[in-house]
Length: 517
DNA sequence: CTGTGCAAG
DNA sequence: AATTCTTGCACAG
View 1 (cartoon, chains in turn orange, red, brown):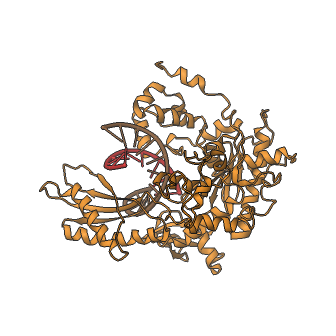
View 2 (cartoon, protein in one colour):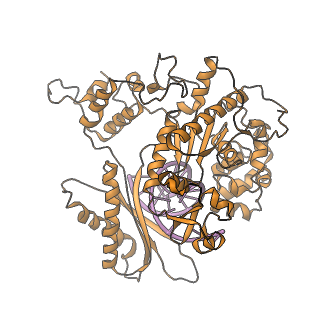
View 3 (spheres, rainbow, N blue to C red):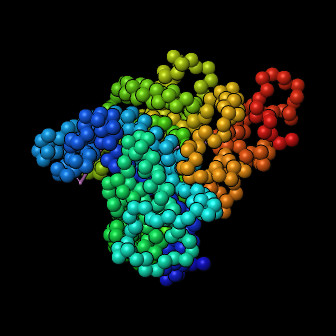
């Protein structure tokens, strides 16, 4: 099937978008995050204009400062000119912010297990399950909390009959509860967007700031997207895609909606072309993806110029120490290292922003903790040579980056599985918060551990696949963290049971109880 | 599995 | 009004 012209694709775009969406997504965005954290940590700052300084830049500031004319990403110099009594707080150490970010994530998780963190100050929450439960319990649809995008005359011109608006109204009160909770427990204020997908939720939430929330009905989705004005304002269209779009004359949202799909395919590839076309109509099928532990841990350091191996080795050591520290704190053990370099070779005016990387698996085998750093430095230097010193050419390097991946929980079933069962007996629901929260524990026939078969696509795809060697039924009942542990142990062959040899009366491995017979 | 490119905050 | 830094995902060989 060749799609020669754009008519075909446009026909498939429903006039009212998201009609078939049964999800309810909340996007939570903390108001001027760094500034808020500083004010919470130091109440003396309350009522005063404060700015967060990194290097010579005011990266963000509180709303008092904004009223006085201070803007985000302003130089310290001009910020002080505009607002001489601006209080500057150094925000180069992100520790405090990471900690608060984690607390916020945990707090939001009490409303739904489907929380996705985006940066330090944003989260998506899929509350479809909770809403459906509430409705099935005969919860009365409350009045909408906060702002409703569009429909400014207060009248809903063309109410949708599919039930989405009722669910969104409930979503708005759930969002209100989340914001109240963040305020009372952490002192944090934020904005929220409530919609049927991530795209609309994020954009809607940004329409009323600060400390407000906004719901968008699918009937207003097209209008909301159009209000972004330009295509590059769509989340998912970055600078590179925006440039390519510009080359084919696509700047506005409207132009993106109208552009010939075949041409778009040629410019961006079919998949991306289709995706951003969908975005332009407010359609976004992306699921809220649970944020797990990081998949990689790394650091990189840029500098003016380095030309000698010994300099590189020095920088490498320093950098490695930093990363190793992070890895140690994480607790897991990586199986591969990756080295990134940025080479600069002054060719005719080219920016040569060229980064290259090489990775290799690492064998922690018999290396003591004291041994470890030097050992890895050598590995890294080998990788380095693969990239820059293979030929005798002159080289200059302006960046080194080290990243570890393949992080695996240190395989000691004592500290994970056993501990889990120990704690588990006490209370199943403890990590589910105050009952009023979302009332997902109401029927109590099944707890949250096994998100029971819902027809909600969002949770379906979050299901982990059961490794061959385990009983799928049992597996499906296990909580997610245990599922993951079983998967990784299956994958790595940790504790392989030889045909269930009952002879081993050793510290019986709990894994065996989950295996198929 | 490797390496590159893009996006986001 | 950025640029840098960190992470994750998609693509391709």
